Image 1: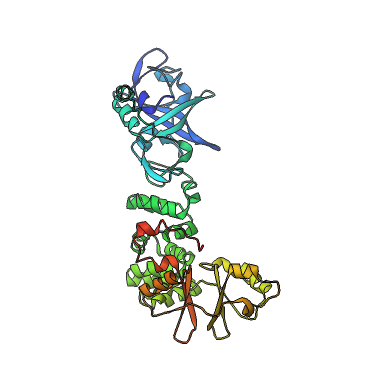
Image 2: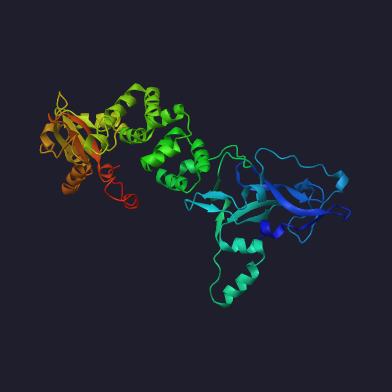
Length: 418
């Protein structure tokens, strides 16, 4: 398969054999559902300026010299379209996102393929061999590597797995970010951390609000604040509404006080009230790191009634591994797990199988105390109560360990409680 670097600088001649100049760039465009862009024109460098020649006027592209089917006077210059990519100008040496390997990589070369009379961009070369090829050293390097018994690895990824960074000139993609939206938020967060500020802004702008919220929850609050710095207040407020209240509170705490208040005023009243409650507690206290999204039921409900309640309300909870039992004054009186619920006989009341000896932490307890309780009792979450045992929220294991375990280690912990 030929590479773009192999074709650059090749002479281009018209029907009469008159040399017009040399190949400077190749224009490709997406068509229909085909994921690989098809070559639609070539850019010829001439003594004075450049000429875009439609690919339909090219006899053969992959050749030592590129002949055309028309005389120079008969060539109607190609008019670039919105979805066109100039492969050298727009793609070579640019950072792209490998959505299969989940990483940010640099394009060193592009591999072309001829199918049914058309030429397509088949693969992206991100390896050192691509750089050597552009310098004209690839064959020599491969010979030396072969003699040493260490063949050079080919860093090739399919164009199918590539996502061009959206929004900036001269890249013009009509529907960017489709593959990105399908990535796990943790993978997206890792990719964004490798991008420049302007690039990360463009990526986030191409994603829907829910995906942005999920992604921001995977990074530290100070990084969250930098990512939303250039977003409009209306979009940030929408994102905050989709985030867990504790995560939203952490983000708002990192923003200037006036902007934080403005954003709270733009949020829906229910979501804003939860966040304001969390912001009222010291940042490193149980109240400051808890979430108000949990599932609580009364002790007089039956197993069937609890299941119905879960189906209607559990989607908004941080975790449903534990279900908390509260009385009419919202005092915590017990807890049970999903396992307890599944094993209970039909018709059994919650009060008959719940655990009455409940481990709790106080809203004023330190984060260290919360982490110790979770570790000592091997919990995935712990309820947060006040001095009168009124329940205010829960602290999940990852939030309790957030400032105790280094971030690099924490990301490797399995999130079994979700």
